[in-house]
Image (cartoon, rainbow, N blue to C red; front, top):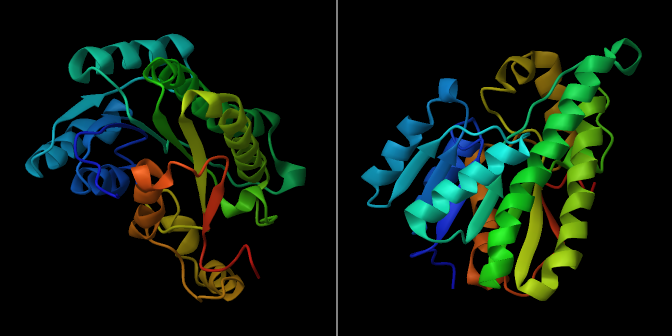
Length: 251
C-alpha cells in the first residue's frame, strides 16, 4: 500500500536541505525521481544518488516562479517518463526581519516565491494529472502558517499560510479528477538554511522549549507523512495539512 514502485515523482527544490532527503526517501520507497533545483544546488548529484538506489532519475533546473519554465519541465518529464504520479513542492525561501524593519522588497520576494513557486508547479503538473485522472500533490507548508512565529518570521508565516489555503482550494477543485492535494507542516527543521539561526543557544533553547517533544525536527522526520501522501494509502485523503512538529500545533 505504501510502495511507490513504478511511480514518477517530481521534487522541486529537490537538492536542498529538505529536498535531498525527500528525493532519496521517495526513491527508497520505489519511485523514479525528477530532481528540480538551481544548478548551484547540484541536482545532478542527488539524481546520481537516486540512480545508485536502482531507480531512474533526471536532474533539471527550472524556475518554479515561471509558468513557461514549469511547462517546459513537465514536457521534459513526460517525454522522459511518460507520466507524472507525484509532485512534491519543496522549493522555498525565507528572510528574518522584525515586522517594523522588514524591507518591502524582502517581504514581497518571500511571499511571491513561496506562493507562486508552489502554485505554478501545481498548475503545470495538475494539467497532466487531470488527463491521467489520478495524481498526488504534496505541498511544503509550515506550522508557522498557523502558529504565529514572532522572531522575524512575518514573511515566511504569511506565505506558508497561503500555501495551506492553496492546498485546500486545489484539493476541492481537483478532487473530481482523482487528484489528491495535501500538505505537510513541519516545525523548524535543522537544515543548511536554518542551521546558522538555530545554532544560536538562545534561539535553540527558545524553540525546543515551545515543542512538547523538546527537540527540533530533522528532514527524515518528514518522510513518513510524505510517503503516506504519495502512496495509494492516501487515496481518500485530500485537502489535509499534516503537522510534523513534535506537538507544537497541539500545544
